[in-house]
Image (cartoon, rainbow, N blue to C red; front, side, top):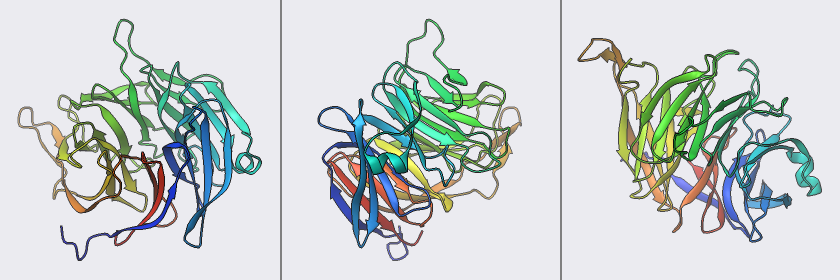
Amino acid sequence: MDTSTAPQIIEHIRESLSFTPTDTKWVPGSARFVASGVSPRNTGVINMYQLEKGEAKVIGTVNDLKHGVKCMTFGQSRLNDRQLAFGDYGGRLSIIDLESSVADGVTKSLFSVQAHTSIINAIDGIGGSPGRGAPEIVTGGRDGCARVWDSRVQHAVVSFEPEEGQSTRDCWSVAFGNSYNNDERCITAGYDNGDVKLFDLRTNCIRWEHNCANGITGIEFDRKDIEMNKLVITTLESKFRVYDLRTQHPKDGFSHLVERAHKSTVWLAKHVPQNRDIFVTLGGNGGINIYKYHYPSKRVGEHHEDAAPIGITGSVELLNSRVLSTQPVVSFDWSPDREGLCCMSCLDQSLRVYIVTKL
């Protein structure tokens, strides 16, 4: 790691919170972001912050939510609508008009449904950009189900559930990908026993499944709106994996690499929106690592047994690392509009804004 040319991780703002944070998201097309969590009374809180003169000012709060908020996304919303979708600890999926809700302090609900029998662990959205299919939301719950939702109907349009008689495993993470036109779309779901499954929504079947040996804490495609390219999976036991999704072998599936990081649980990975080959991992040690993926000279080779095409994995380079807190970093989001600008929250009840240079 060459520190003279490495990206610099610079703290811009640090704020204390009166609630336990669970997620942070930039409001698209603005200098604002939202932070969600659980209040001391076990109710839900969503704060909106405005960046102004080196400070993050609270410009609105939604605090009339019955259950704590676990996860959020703007992925299904058009840029001008700014409709926030979130899942809570009671298993309910809601979409609210963010602007009017924070202005009045009262939830202006646009859609609400009991999505799971208990806590919604993860959420992702897609369809906010024209030509990339219908707006949809995917949720993963403690009941072991991964479900896809369309806000025009009050029931799941697709539901992937444990088979009858199988033990139920927590679905800890979900993500959309491969949505490069109006027809193609996939979701991945990661479970507490290390299972990862890739569901093809066009054919309504499992396209690939694998076990990562450790519980999957986070999962993300490098880009949602292109043909499947790379997938990063973070797990317990200080590991993350990068899969090359361009070539699938009939027996061995997708090629991948495994890296150790943080000397603790790797909570999640997030790709830089402006450069899909750079991503960060966030650790249970309160640290942040910045990696760059290097493609191999040839991405497809022949399998040693049957000579069928098989992917060749590249390598990752650690660009920089820094420990930010004594407690785990539990949420992170890159600004979609300003390269290197990011917000995050930690379990020390702090909210932070950082600037990462030289990306």
